[in-house]
Amino acid sequence: PEGDVGHQLLALEAYDQSEYSDALRHVEAAIERNPKAADTQLLMGQILFQLGRIDQAEKAFQKVTATAPGLAAGWIGMG
Image 1 (cartoon, rainbow, N blue to C red):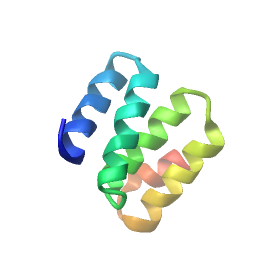
Image 2 (tube, rainbow, N blue to C red):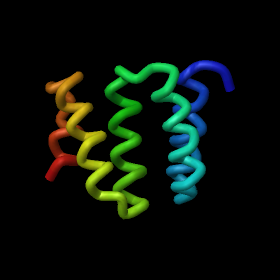
Image 3 (cartoon, rainbow, N blue to C red):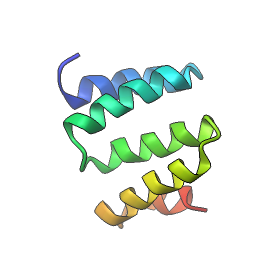
Image 4 (cartoon, rainbow, N blue to C red):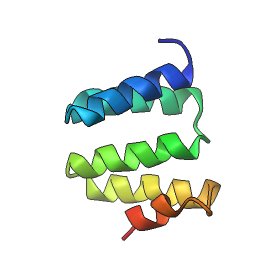
């Protein structure tokens, strides 16, 4: 897919099917194309959490709260 949205959609689909490694690959591609997208960073944090990569997930959630402080899910992800 071209652009960040296509990769984000594929990441969401893989996440919904508990295919977290595939989801991570797609969300990384989406972030590479649009690193400031808070919703994509949020998805990255959720995927990393499911993979047991808690420290990395927390960093992703911190990016969400820094770029979109009004997005409650970022704060919730940080615990």
